[in-house]
Length: 414
Image (cartoon, rainbow, N blue to C red; front, side, top):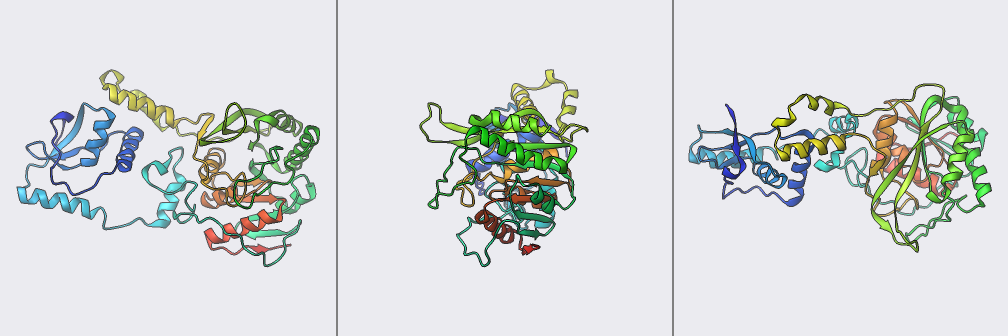
């Protein structure tokens, strides 16, 4: 069977094609072509009528392709053509994924957002089942949670404790060294959640000097447990950037870059420019080479002849290269509702940071756990998480969230 090139304008869609191709699916096909290239020839008959590949045909039209690869199925009778078109479409729908293997495959894919192809591994999906993560309901605490309580959650640990208390950190980690520190401290902005509960955050309204001392104590408490070369990602507010930077410096860490999370919508307020981003300070502890993973698989594309590519192919090439490189801009949709914590971070956002700066089986620490998103991502990506949260209310919600999504019952150690 020979592959040939044909002008897209010469290809004719089959008039009775029963397979629907809604706009969202065409967008997914376009994303696939832009990410991986146009790797599937369209199957046509001797009259250039499409037998298989209507969705690709529509996507290639929108992408501006002039010529496309095709294969001719000349051996089919008219009756066989109609039957094959139906059979080909139906057979692909007759089976489903092995969900365990699918989960493993998704966790090994680096720097390619699989949600653009319809896989539910983003903020609306359970990191374990691929099903929609249900918003938590307010649940009665069966036992009161107090500072010092420590819980085992599978391979992970969660403590109700003070991030500035060195004894609490030692109790939580119990001699374990940390490979990556991701955390979301209070922003010192007296933030109140937008849900009916109007959730608040402790230590979120201080004088600037007191707030800087608070952050310094928190980071210095972490430092003895952080391996040399271990990276950190620390979310903060622009209004307190100086306090965060000085606290990082006081801990002896090296601040390298400020990443920007660009949200899909802004928060309406009284500022001249409405807030639609959150910054995150990135760096590492000096003393050893830091670990960072990037997908450089696109580099071999430079060996092809750019002069021979069409305009549409060159545009695809440039977009694929740009999107394949980690940049200081993180484009992830914000949660539709911060049901568990007023500054809840989407799983897809934390997932990107964990993938870039840790290996499987590495230890990831979060001393301001909030809603437990770091914990949930670590469970998904085969990392080991140690989390600290001061507010018993949020500790309770993290415990419930983990049990609800994993089926693992937390065990109280202290």
